[in-house]
Image (cartoon, rainbow, N blue to C red; front, top):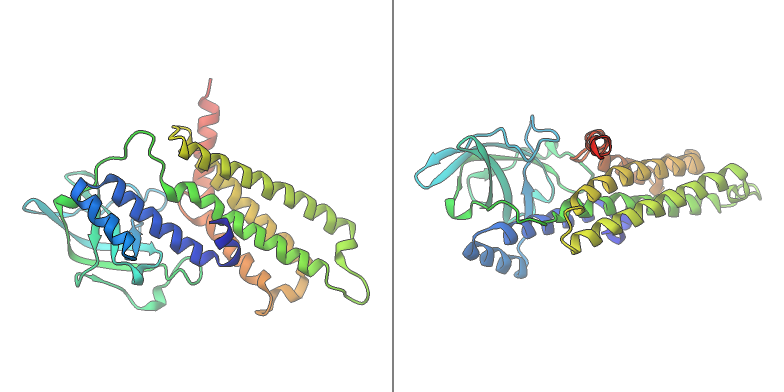
Length: 295
């Protein structure tokens, strides 16, 4: 994830959402449907998450859209936002409110699913993250997912930190390149403030990477600490990426604003992680609450 994100954050985001949606459907679906989605994944079908809603914000797991009962099934009419890789998706991991509570479903894209004009593209560039409209899209009772098992670690939550860490590494690489470029016989890499800023950024990026690897290790152990650790990792990694990109802008100077420079793209992409749910302010409040409530 980190390697992909350092080269192309949008691709890394789509890949993470694809695997996260597929993993959720294979893990939480009934046995027959689980086997179906596993075969679809092996056969190269694409998956995406259709969870965020116009007024959902960070509460994207608690849908505010009621699905209409239809016999043993339901039908959804509504809108989802920020669906990365939406147009390429064959299957969606989707939530809706059923019988007053949350319901998560596997949904195969059909003629009831449409896309607004591309002008409504949103999110990180090139993720094709956009709105999806549903017009009585069938939510099959057989595809209603079970609650996560104890110790379940959501791949997207665990992987999110590595997205920003990859961007931070790209910022450091761009900073190094700009600092070592000769300008009138002098190079910024010899200037004290550039060395100091770079040293601190390197330490912060390494700290975020180690925290992310710890969260991934906890997830592999099926530890109940994995998901809280992933939330801690995301908020730190998001802020570190933004700071690394800001330092790269300072070192790159005016040349960093040119389309030919990677710095301008890295700076924009670095902002995305902190806005993705759970956002940094939301995560800070959660983590702060855990700390203050701990014995």
